[in-house]
Length: 429
Image (cartoon, rainbow, N blue to C red; front, side, top):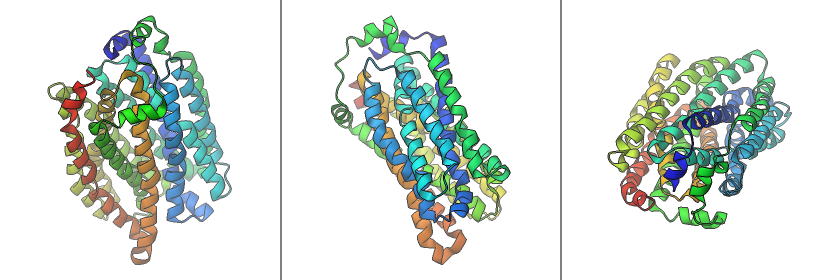
């Protein structure tokens, strides 16, 4: 049924959908990640501790983002839901709340604005993944989802570069206003040009034979019965915990330890992190489609090996006394740690039925963002405060040592999940 529905989508419509969704996801990550490069000037201006920085950059956003993502995904899976309009409403909401961050005069106001950003962004990825999976055949799905996932490194790169430049030039408050408002205009593009494939006759006939829509809890329960999906949750959550935590505190590390300005970090770390993330995301999707076609367990082989190999290189990078050497060494582990996105979400979409695709994506996002985005920056910030009496401004370096070593955890879970893929994917064929 899924293949029939996918075949009904013309190639031109698929390309248009993928490009529009990519641009939306770039806006998503610009608005989500710009706070990382602005964290140090915000902390100085509002007199924040490292724990408060972690709360502002992580948990305040992630808690509402994850909790609201599940009911939004359940609503998105309903046959009558117009997913492009849902994405447009979400884009308008998070863009407006990003702009409001620049008007905050204290920590509580900034926290509330960040919560608003999380509320808006909850309505983006679950319907986007559902749209892509409906329009792209299974054998090309890893590459298509990896293409959408390019929004992560590209958005992070632009958020760092634009945010760092604006922080040095006009201050952190105006930086939020400049990056937030264009998203409102982009929402109009989504409404005008992004089509709902459920309205197509071919898709309607293919989906009409599927089972009735389940409740949100019933759908989640069904998804979590898969042992492979549970292992995928563990792997993806651990990877996100380290990724979000390291991104936030590496930007601060270069400012505190190497004495760089936000603009300098945004430019140089943004280029390295963004280029490596783009290369890793594209390569991960290609490797999954290429070798997964021969043996489906190899969909997750590259993420497992890549995260293990990245550990010693990252440890060496954080030891460097010269920021140029540190940045150069960080390129490879960042690339290797970016291999997992397309394979992870492609495997998740293959482990569930047609009517559970958005809820599967939202379940993954729930755990990845609550554990990863919510707790990663916060945990590392609390740890930095604990280490500060002993190590002073170098406490962040020691936090990053631990984060690099923990890369072995997601590597283990990706390997364990790969051993079950052939058996469990066969059940959905």
